[in-house]
Length: 416
Image 1: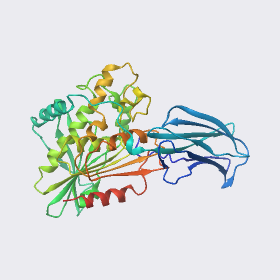
Image 2: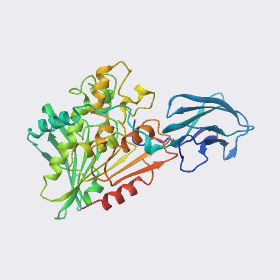
Image 3: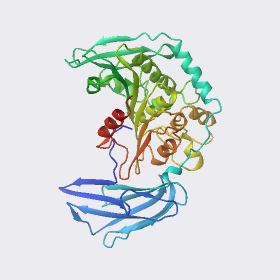
Image 4: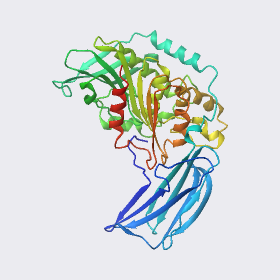
């Protein structure tokens, strides 16, 4: 999974100079309905911009990718609309495939039904707060040991850039880049958390013009290592292969225990800087970074605003009740009780319950990596009055083109 996959209900195949495009639309531009209402999906296939009138499209309806609620074949010579509904809160997804005998062309459509009424699939662990309080106390007892190495390569007259390392749990380190404005003054703080993946991390120097910022890596390896180094780590048998599921049999050993505590360490560092303005501590991220934003906002009340795009790690237990689960599909089977137990402590849904600061969240109605159902389940639990949800009806798992503008406006509007 990456934060920039493009799955927008419009897919094309190019071959021998021809381009076949398959598009799915709903009868409401916003893709939003009330339970029991009927949605009408329309499919259109074109080649080189002209309607394709020969061939067939196979389609199926599901609850956000789970199960089959209907299926059929559409004849492009006489295409007919496809209708469906949900009688409960959720997302109705249409999956369509055109095949000319060699290469398939896929497209998706999504309709959200009473999104605001989608709840979590399981209760939170009874000792959720007590356990995470204990974890934060463990790292609070560890000296921060901030190690900064100035980067002449990335520093400019406007921004000072440093490779950053902080002490973390069990002798591990937090890795990332720290940027600060070169001009003296007092500045807000910003923690930026990446999407999933294994690779070199670069500084987000643009943010260092107006804020004290950390662009964190979730892995305990120097951020300046080569692409080849990380490729080996991520490959079969490498230390970071399938890292998102490593240690999931116990809350004590799960990979994201150290990762989530890394956010607290970064906040310790940022709010301890002499040029911090003493008021603003903001967090942003997409996908895995979106889940991390929800987590940081719920885990550390020093966070004053956050922006989470298509957040992952939401509603891990959805599969137990016949619903979608967010990336990384942490629970392998319903009878893996030890993993089910672990999941509750690392579900963004449960951190969302504790968010008190203003937060911006986005979801895509055809997101197959972090399904809209899972994101809505988390968003609906956020008690903060200053929360905002953006629903992109024809967006899959990606960063929407206007997201940067939305984030900038939201963070600026919520600075104290």
